[in-house]
Every structure is written in C-alpha cells, then in structure tokens.
Length: 409
Image (cartoon, rainbow, N blue to C red):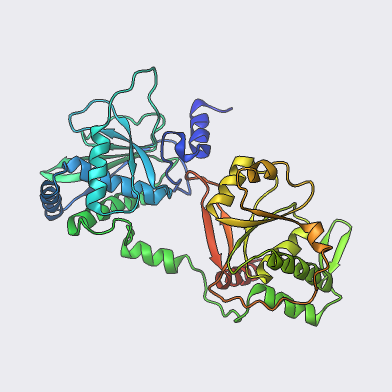
C-alpha cells in the first residue's frame, strides 16, 4: 500500500527541474527510512580567509556560503539554475531561493547569491513551494520538512565553524553525505583562494574520489583494435556475406543484406547534406530497419541519437534541441508524437527509411573516414536528477563498451 511519503518520493523522482526545486542524486545502495547527521569542521584559517574575502568584496558571509551551496547543487544536478531552501541566521522560515550559476567567477556567484537572498520574501498562501535541499544559517537542528532530502546547516562548534548535514537515509548514505560535505568545503576553499577564478573550472572532487571515478570504476584494461565498430562489421560482411546477421520475428537478414541497406541509407543522409558529427535521431521501432539506420549513421560519420517513438512530443523536442539534431530517420507508424515535436523545429530534415532504401543509392561501403575521438552517439538519461541529460560517447569508447559487453555477457 502506498503511503503519502511514497507519493512524495515519486513526485521528487519524476519532477522536472523547473517544478520549484532542484533534485539531488539518490546515492545509497541500501535505502532505509530515517534521518542521519554528518558534521564537518572548517579550519580556522579557511574561515578567516572567507570572512576577509567576503568583507573585501562587500558581500555577506551568508552569500558566500550560499554561493558554495549553489555550486554544489549545480554540480550534483547538472542544472545551471538551482533552487534551495534558505534560512537566515536570525531564524524564521526557510524560503525557496533560486540562484543562477551561469559561467562566471566566484565573486560574481557570491554577488548573485547576495541578490537572491535580498529578494527573498514570505509569499502568501497556504503552502510554499517545496525544496529538496536547505541551507540553514540559523543552525536549526529540528526535523526535516517532508519534501527536504538534505539540510546543510552552518554553525559554531567549540568556537569553530562547522557544516552540519542532516539527510534522509532512504535517499543518501553516510559516504554520500561525507562527500557532499567535502564538496561544500572545496567550493568554499576555492572562493577563498581566488575569488576571481571561474567557479566552473576545476573539480569539487577530492583527489581520492577523482582517482576512484577515473580509475576505480573503469574496469580492466583491454586491447581494442584501431577500427570503428562499423568497420569491424564490414570485415564480417566480407568474411561471411551470406550468414544470417539478424532476425526479427519471421524476418531474417544476412550480413550482406544488412550492410547494403545501411549503405543506401548512409548515402541518402550524405546526399541531404550530412556533415561530420551531425546528429541524426533514429525514431523507429526496434526492427531490422532500426539496425540498418543506426549502422548508416555510423558509416556516414554522423552521431546516433536514439529516440523512442512513444516518447511525448515535448520530450522529443527537448532532446532534439539539446542535441542540436539536424536529421531524423523515421518510418511510417512511428511519427504520432514526432510530428508535433518537429512542428516546432522547422530546420530539422526528416528522412523516411523506406523511401531512402528505394532511392537508387549505391549499396557498396561508403568509405567515410571516422576517427576514434569522433562522437559516435548521444544517449539521454532518464532524468532522475532533473531534466534528461545527453551523455556523449566517442567511437573509441563505444568499441571499448562493446568489447566489455562481449566479456561480461
């Protein structure tokens, strides 16, 4: 039976970034209902530099703390404009505070944060907008609001400034809380070290976490050939042209048939002006024609963007816009939501798979030069931390991924 908290969790998980709060990642392998705390003491030297810097740049220390908090939220969510609850040092209710972290210096971000705080006011109405995170400068130690996952409080501990995190254990674990606290300390240290540095340059990760992200999660090293995936496929075509390459229901294509269909589609794209690393959305059901379309994009030097035909029109339009898509390969029966999406994007050229296949194009290999660092595909995430993001993969990484699949599966 679903509880109100279950509904609230689902709302937070599926809400878009513009729904009034910034969504933070769910970082726990063992979610358990409850609350926990983490405390991080800031060094006296760092606090002294922060106070000195705030005074020199004529911004309150509260704005510096908010700037660091906003930088962390932007890094966690991937959104440049973030919303958090803000509770001033004199107490009072936590108010939704929106901060833009568009490119600029730490000094500019602190001033933007100061403006955001200055503009806060209690809105009339029975319910204020929810927020997942809260920056509390009054160091409140009460319960979290129902919508809040994480509260970062700043207060004195034994004469030193401390960051106290309270978080929901069904969303974050102790290691995640410690990392987030560390991100805040790093952001504050970067402000103190050079307020005129670009705040988006550098990383908030510790050296240990950076090594883990780059090396610890990378898996075993393996030798991969200096070929692109479609070139290896073409080698198999030459070696076994009449072997069955793919089956879908009663439909069976040999390597030669699949390769020739992909080549014709690839030439159709090139004839319509496809250039190196142009993004091509493939909006079809997962049939053999879909397989030929994906191969065609790689062969022609384009970038494959998978788009499910059943996606809502606004999501398709957002994906095409964010990916700077120039072409769409589709089929009859898969355009019910694509058509209204394309109605708002008149510069995108659409190509029907069936029409291109019968367009009289040559069936031999294209021979387009494609480098290992060339972009292969863009894959949009589910949007668990806000709006979906397009992850980009180069051909070298794509081939490494395929070899890993062969080993694992």
